[in-house]
Length: 246
Image (cartoon, rainbow, N blue to C red; front, side, top):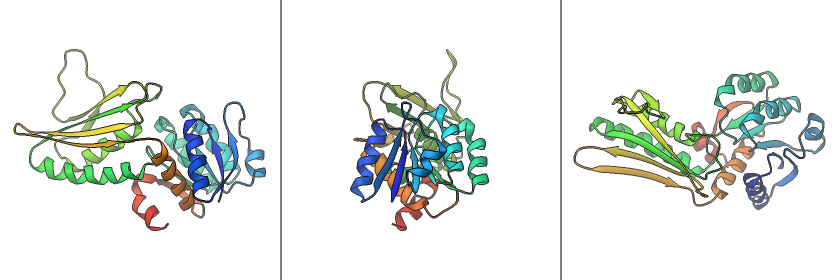
């Protein structure tokens, strides 16, 4: 499979290594100093594009990919407010698109564990919270992964009906709100904790990324899967299908 990369920072290099390890070829890399165009996306011979660029570049990048009629995997986060535009571009061009707040296979299986725990512990009357920690250069917070985890909790725990990411000074957390707290420090790759509290005990579920290789592997697997498909897909919603099709 021939891959073009939009964004060639740390994640771009990890994806290149993962792609080569799976027998694929990275035919082109693009970044702020070497921007992509419709012509060079077409001429490089790519069969699929993987985007790990910047949130403010995603709309323009998808417009280019749509014009070049190439399927795309989007690993960039922090652009959720632009989702209607992305959906329209993908539908109009009739291309395939996989997006993920986190392409780690482990994280997406972790989401299934969180849903099950939320259902069981919600029935038992436990309270819940989420905390996430990343490197100090990460620009969006809370992380896209934390928001997806929050959705998983809300889907199964009836006592929580909304997500809260900050509290007014002097205010307590409302009992129906699921509070997400964020830490940005050093070079933390990514740690997500879901806590469940009762008066008798505490239970914690933790996913801790050791490096970026897991994210890169998932993005390459998603690229393999989307090549011959059209439509918009969320990685976490199709993880089982993607893994079974390998």
